[in-house]
Length: 370
Image (cartoon, rainbow, N blue to C red; front, side, top):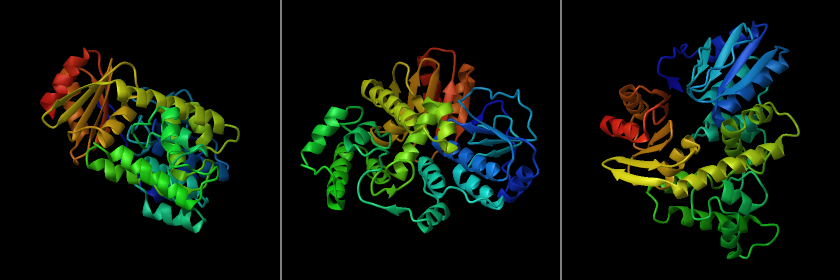
């Protein structure tokens, strides 16, 4: 995220960054707390490992300062945060890191690269083609990371519906389909149809487009589907960054820890969506609540619930915003935080903030800036 008061290095070309990394004795990789940036970090780390270049990788939460106690020849930030790095891959960090890894002569993991672009919200065509050439294929059904479909449906943060956050309710909905223990393709299509109808009923029109990303997934990788892998990457980046780094680096033995973090993050996010106090203004939907993962909650509300094109989620000292009409909500958040002496971070249709004033003051400043 681009943050107020923080300088960012200009985005390097993949070939220039590859040349810088190729000549480095030690590299620091600093990832934003997003699945897309985390995947990009893993891709670069794998390339550095193949080249026998020592590195350190970490995930930095919004507004946190990265640990600079370790000296490095080159520091690369992935995501829009910058973090005072020598080079910043702010736009499409997973797809760009995939290209850089190839420039270094490595063979980047096609599933990790694809999961990273899925986590970023837009599948990169070049990455998808490479994954398909490696044998990754689509299948009917849902993009969940586990074989237990009810578990996946309840904890997916790619969706928000009546079963979200409630495994038993998800299991009851699926029971109506009378599924066999080993669902065939036709059964998976029925599941997808059930879910699509459930999450789009009484939802804004954009929910129809959003839910499509959670259906007919690519299969394969360390989890049941690539979309499920993307969901886990995004959750662990925010909930358990150490586990996230281990997962992105391909370490064995972290799958269950990653799934546990995914379930925890999803439960917190879906609970906050259900319990939030909401208000609707001209062009703006506001949700307030207690401690919650504001970034994920803002995305879920914007995609599946908000009747207005801009969504603002606020809790004590933290906020996140999303826009679904193409406007630069990061600029709106900067104006709002400037007005209350806070700090903002973001780009394009998404933004975060931290502040020390009552939530009502931040909401009013944001309303004036919209």
